Image (tube, rainbow, N blue to C red; front, side, top):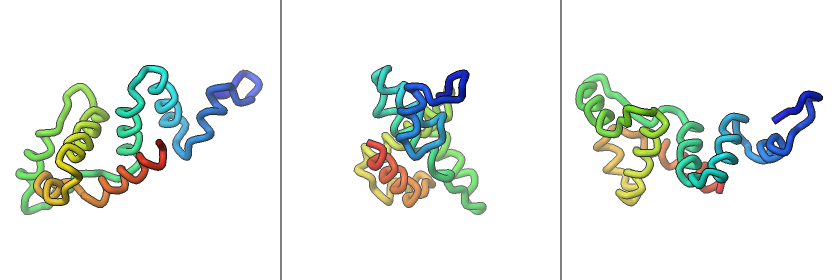
Length: 118
């Protein structure tokens, strides 16, 4: 993002257009070049909010089992993408979030951030 004289590079000028951490901004820019901008847009939005899962003490095992259904062993980022894609496929239903121990308000915030970054 900066050259050897501390001036913004072409990439740096693009990165400052996003209200995000520089690493996340760069992810969005590179994703467009790689043809996966929709997926990265979702991941960046998911990384911009607090934890999406909740774990009630009296239902810890049940919530852990629900969270495991979304796990993608290769990557926590892909796990986040998977959660959002499933919620979208379920038409953004509140009861689906409750069943899977997911904060619906947090996912709504993700959807809002995602639409703002488009």
